[in-house]
Length: 110
Image (cartoon, rainbow, N blue to C red):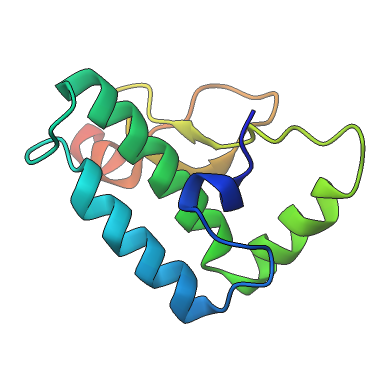
């Protein structure tokens, strides 16, 4: 499995501006509306890119991720849970609890 650094095509020592530039370049390339590859493949790629950017763009989550990469039992494929209604990533990370609903769907359920 690829690490988030490999997904964005950057080194572990990349700066915040390099992470953002790589994310923006890949997001434009793999956006489902403009991608040259199939829609399903583009959607899968953009989801991986978004997860990688959401982890690496924040210093706290990036340091936790880097610390986990150094451990043998770290799950590289860790990603946010997805909303049980719309499938978009939530702000919660996988834990053993009931399925989460994103903020948008939670607002429509009230």
